[in-house]
Image (cartoon, rainbow, N blue to C red):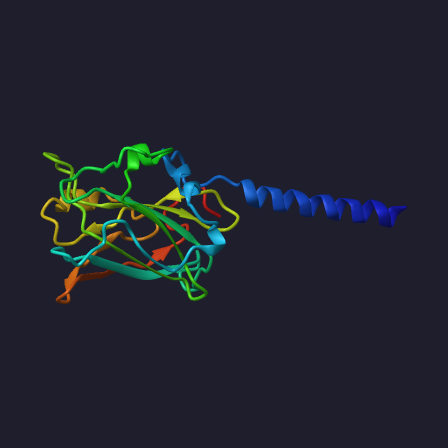
Length: 208
């Protein structure tokens, strides 16, 4: 009888720990983060390279950004992490096609999902976004992270080191969630390239 009681406590404890791990909330409020679940394909089928809509070499020079996502220790590559990305067009607007549903009504159609491979690697191609019209905010690419066992949360946007709107004052206010989001863009001829590594949990409130 005692053995049965002990087994019951161990079993229920395991269930509690598993449930807690799955429902633990980190990152604080995040408006629109749930858009990550609007992926048209299951998370486990998302590729480690994606071309966001409108990528073309037809009169335009696309941009490719890649990097590695690391676990909280800052060293171990994190596989199976999903990144949801969306950005403005060359006029600084989130363009619509008129048939948007869900969060696409606000984020526009220039959005996509990319996952990390077994080595934590990811890469996406897009057209370089423009700042909001008449605004003072630097051009950026929004990014939401979903890692196994933890809720979705936002990290610092992708920013561009050569953006004149990215002033010293703006840089000083960055939270560096997930590490620095400032990307150095290099012109390699037929396209632009940049790199950003992401560190899960870094500067994320409530993270383990």
